[in-house]
Length: 472
Image 1 (cartoon, rainbow, N blue to C red):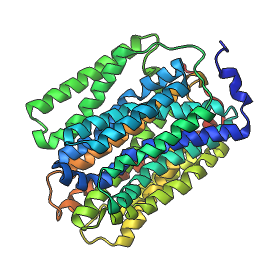
Image 2 (cartoon, rainbow, N blue to C red):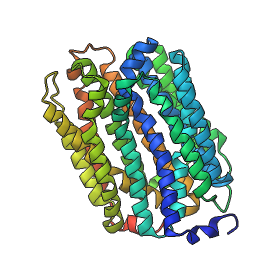
Image 3 (cartoon, one colour):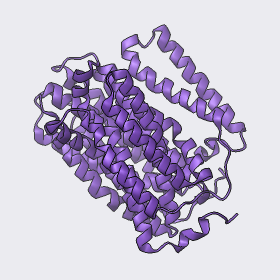
Image 4 (cartoon, rainbow, N blue to C red):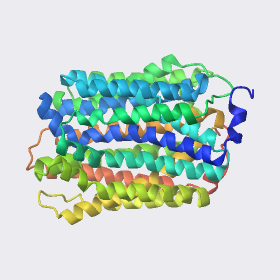
């Protein structure tokens, strides 16, 4: 039971452990960046490929939908075949897909290439977290490392619009994907040099029926949210999507409850800490993705700002997330998840409430303050969510633990994009500010949800070691 590389994990020096963390953070920065960097370039992509709002939503959500669908299976594959091996494979697929995106001649090719990017990214996100968790045997050190990992992931998503705006100021939208190439090459080289191989001591079987049903559920939910405004919420196609989603959900629950090694152990959701972390991850990323998309459309279409100016407007959000995420990780290691979750919910709620009366002439100072508050809240949210979820499973299932929370994040991102796009899909620039107000109410609701999740949390949850997988 102690074969492979698991015994070597505690022998890593402190410098080697933190080097491993840095390599994983580099790759995770790329995954998060590509989740949001496209947002600020959507108007340019629409003009370059003659794509309407629905098509633009699919360009964003094709990536997040595939990523969310495959994360858990990728985590299980990594635990079975080796985390470094799967990590390197993910980097290669992600890099190749990025080149296809940059060369895409049409919207259809771009959407397909973005989906392929999601396949590669699914091999990076949970595996990176599993590598970090296995490299850090000390609970306090692990909590700090998770805080840094979460801060880099949060920073990458918040920095996407800034980076995209800067690229679009001097190049065209294809540069949004060319930028991945040097990062991929560096990550592959550093992974080969510094990241040790590891895997779970007991291989788990792949749950193909569960994987297929989960993909159908997510595709049905996100697809109907994107296409609903176009086809009609009560049209035959929409009703068929509702039925498909309901049937797939029921089938998923039935299959997973009867498998010896399910894709997702549904008993874990009976644990308040674990289920709260998953719900909190969805809420935090719905809030972030809605903020970024509504910000992009409002500033470029209604205010007439350039992509660079639009990206720079999100700097307060990026700075807030960057500063507060590692701080949140230290707080989790010392006192547990409750305080940072309360701060996360409070700041996100206040920031969104600043914008519920948005107009075409809202003060720039108010906009920047709102973005800063939302960024601070997002920064505080990631570490307690991730740490609580990881500590809810035994370490030999660290890949699956990371995959579940990463799935929740990406599902939140996909839902946020779909909901935000549905609000403004059929309105002109002058009506966009008013049409987006329900979106800011929803972002505030996500903040309130984080406050509710924080209420029953106990500080000891984050400070203890991983809990047993059985539910009570």
